[in-house]
Image 1 (cartoon, rainbow, N blue to C red):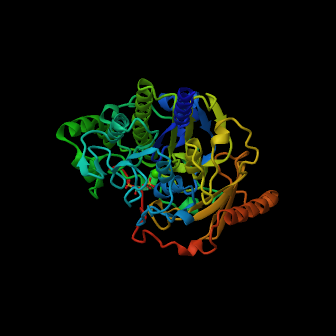
Image 2: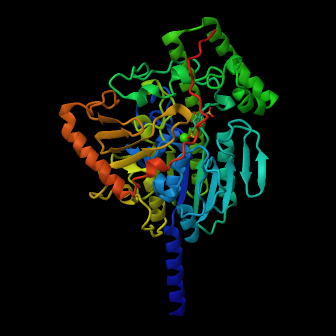
Image 3: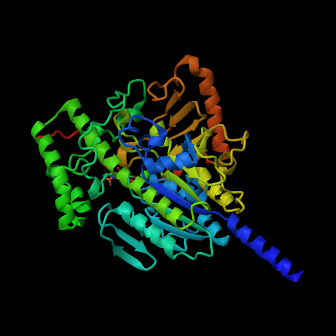
Length: 524
Ligand code: SGN
Ligand code: CA
């Protein structure tokens, strides 16, 4: 009898343990859904991402994962806290740091006996809290031979950032305490500006011409000042030296510091062997006007996609590790990015706007035995929801003050009829990099209302009839009822998420020193 009850007790214990899944969160910086082939789009056949796509095939792809504030630090802070920027305190990137004393989901998982680790890009300035192990890049980090900082100090590691972060993640998985479930955040710098590829991919796509988005030569007609006056066009804002990697134009020394100065002579030799002939060609041809924009688009998007190739490899490597170590079945793999990005749409790179390409971020979730393989969700979800999702996955209670919704019911294929029907957005960093006006807005899956409050301009888009957001319908009398409804929605969301009335005045302007790019450079 006694023996039998011990057996039952042990069985219960082990099944309780077996139910606690491991969580592997793979996160990138600036990865647009347009560059994940599972999402479709014009690049899907020319630059496939097989390992990322396998997560969609084996799990769920979220078509509408919207960010709360389309910029790095604030997105990360929202993910950690499950709260909007005005409550977690990180509203802008520049000159601000995350208050690590507040409640975060890793801290709550730690309390629930999870082993937690953070490896790669952090960008929140303050020292990470809630992690048993952390080994992070400093601020934006470097692509080649990056510096890492951990509890034991600073070290420079030779190699390519995406590969090193993956090596470090695998090394931690190997050494971890195998008696506990784990939550690992593997966070890449790629494909952030200045889009520097791994040496082995420097010439990938060289023999191809990438398709151009329809809106590459957008004139911003029918839109407002914010879209016209930003500083993020391929034409004017991509620099020939730093971004286009033509050393001759690197007047400010950025490229030298961030790329050349860090490389070993052998690496630099390979790098120059790849770029020099391509650069010589363009310097000889001296394209101007639209042809120069076209050339810059090709250079930009190819380098970006080359960076993605390493991200895709990284996902392949960790998946392989999980499989080979018997962890595949009990590990949830989530893939996402801090926000989306413009890959030439509207003539842009960068993010910040509530327009679709930067407002939407990829979200793929593989949860063996729970998520039906190959499913797609069109529910309005958000990076605001990640914290509560991870907590529910781990069987940990969700704190009342978190503002998102756990995605677990959607993942399990339950009906989730009472799901949110609109989403609130707020971007605060102006003036600053790329000069995007501050704005807030509401999106209901079809209509998007945006308010650029400093210049008192409204925009309304009907994503059904105008998915590329080319026609502002705000002043169109046919949309008067929609405007009224969406204004009501915005008001309701502000109340629901406790956005203080004075939040707009509270923000200190972060980068007053910022000087807008005056003119496009010509190749001469
Ligand atoms: C850097 C980039 C900007 C980018 C910000 C924020 N310039 O400052 O282009 O918008 O980061 O990016 S760079 O010349 O230094 O590359 S974020 O991902 O951290 O939000
Ligand atoms: Ca980013």
